[in-house]
Amino acid sequence: MIKREIEKIIKDCSGEDGKVEKPISEHGDYASSVAFDIAKKEKRNPNQIAEELKDKIKSELFEKVEVKGGFLNFFIAEDALKKEISLILEQKEEYGRGNKEKTVVVDYSSPNIAKPFGIGHLRSTIIGQAIYNIYNFWGWKTIGVNHLGDWGTQYGKIICQIKKENLDPEKLSIKELEAVYVRFHKEADEDPEIEKEGREWFHKLERGDEEAVRMWEICRKKSIEEFNKIYQKLGVAIDHTTGESFYQDKIQAVIDEAVEKKVAVESEGALVVHFQDMPSVIIQKSDESTTYLARDLSAVKYRLETFSPDLFIYEVGAEQTLYMKQLFATVEKLGWAKKEQFVHMAHGLFRLKDGKLSTRKGKTIHLEEVLSLAEEKAKKIIEDSLSSDLTEQEKEKISETVAMGAVKYNGLKSHHRRDVVFDWDRVLALKGDSGPYLQYTCVRCKRVLEKAGEGDFSETEKFNENERKLALRLVEFKEVVEVAGETFSPNIIADYAHRLAKDFNLLYEGTKIVGSKKRIVLTKATKNVLTTSLSLLTVSLPDKM
Ligand code: ARG
Image (cartoon, rainbow, N blue to C red; front, top):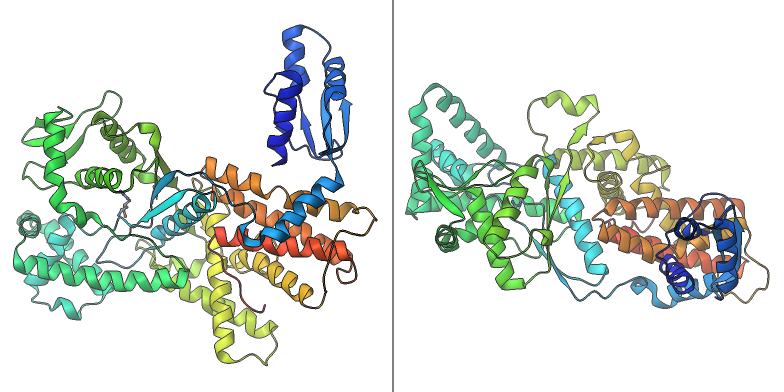
């Protein structure tokens, strides 16, 4: 990693932790302002200090080092670039893989059962999967958990309504189950007794009542079948589906421990955790039913005992920020782990711009509809642009890959904290900052290489401007993976992939690849690094495009 290497060289020569930046324009490939830091301390002229440092720097990494206005500007030697790019070809999809020997548990997706997979959980699913992939590639042992929302009062309420309407749960679709829940609430709004009945059914469920458990199991099974279809479409596979209900028999021990350690105290019949700087939170209700927090605490304990992770990542919506803080603080109060071992990747809202999709205003938008609409749109574009000798099945497959690539990339390209506007035209555009543009670039590399023959760096002619730009981009990859991991920002990979594709296309559109050995190498390296980047984003590639 060039940046690290330069930082080390600066440290060796000056004893300072000098900052290294990538300047825009002609001030070298990398630059450092370390001379200013030293100048401040020693009350000397920064330019003079930079000149002294420059004389000390002896590394084959640089073609030259320049001093300008106190800055040190580094120009990477072409041979160093070529060496690293040769490594990309050698190591192929392994290039850039790290070796951290640490363990992380990533809690993501985690939809709630008995209602369709909403678009809100899409963000958690794709961002969570991307951060999982990045940590895995970075060399961490990664454990993905789908903390399915499959326990809580709402399931008592659904059972209550099913009973009241004398329905057969086996015959109800997920959408109908959601409607059952809505009807319960309508009735409960008019008659508070009904609310109580719902709670009683949850009580029965918690106590293992046969009928309640049977109905709950049906709801759960149906939901999981439905969710799996979506995961399959998205190419997402979560290691463990251990939902909230899994901790049912483990909660009492946690509550006892919390009481014994005086972390939870009684308040009006309930058990509550107090904080100095946050509102209190309930761990057990006054009717003795357990809470979301109690189940999350049990989950932390279980994960600590089962996986001994160094780090916990929760990819959960920003609306749960306070709750997550309360959870992490409670874990620390219990003495199980340090708050610093917990990260909440709080994603913003998914908003829709397209008029057509907001006709269901006020209701949740079902992901299934969004995905099939994306496929339809992709198919139309593909039908208009691809040659007709493709079979219907091939077209189907390509449309799905392109549509999913578009949806996923769109959900990953902005920082997860930001709200995302879902704009069909932008999502399915073949140009600009879109998933299909990156897939297209990869396929383009592949196609060129099929007829290009072998490449190498034996030619003596130096890189031209576009080649050099692409080469520098390629060798940036390892650094990008680390920064994305360290800052929990999959968008950094997305942004990098986009820049890489742009740099390649600039070269491609300006010169012929075939016939130039060095350009063939650059194309191969681009194909490798771009494919890896996209796989980190769970974006797969169509055969043709
Ligand atoms: N099921 C929850 C929801 O939809 C998300 C769960 C997140 N994970 C967790 N361990 N609390 O809001």
